[in-house]
Image 1 (tube, rainbow, N blue to C red):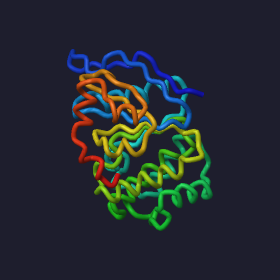
Image 2: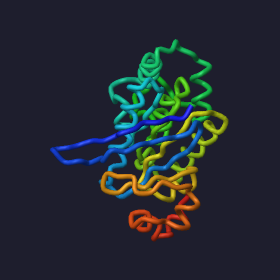
Image 3: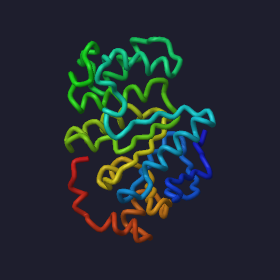
Image 4: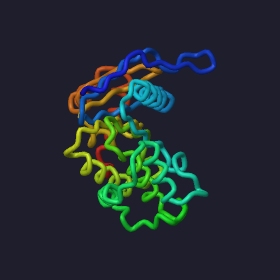
Length: 227
């Protein structure tokens, strides 16, 4: 079933920061949302998650930093149990092991607090929690910005492999065109609270139409990045 939300908008301090926007994503589709800082990417992501959840869709969100999802005073086992409860799912060691193996965190000690794990493992754990219950859509908001490029690329590679034969759609929100270019089927470009361009990735990279897209594509050094 196609994931669709219409009329997404937001205001802050009396100012429109997200103009009315419609979003449609097909099952299993990989979509990138790119734009300069302050263009409204994260605002659109949050509005989309809220709207789809209100419509009854199973949408999971991975924030920019694991610090936003993990309580430093609670064990990793506690976080996992809470994620299962949030989805009203009974504990399932086999499901947990499958996700941990897919994201290469099977050796992590769940008795430890988040600071007992590396940053890369923390973020992979947050992604694993988001994948409990096989969501219709996974929204990832700058999910690798706190990681070095090699760890970031490895994390996204593992996620790609896990989702390869599943219908879970992915919305990757990032200012990193190099990351998006290698990971998505379609690219949406935001500028000043609006989606100004929405195109298959190859077409947009070869022939951007709007000033915002042209500016993103102008610096070709992103082609050399490992992500």
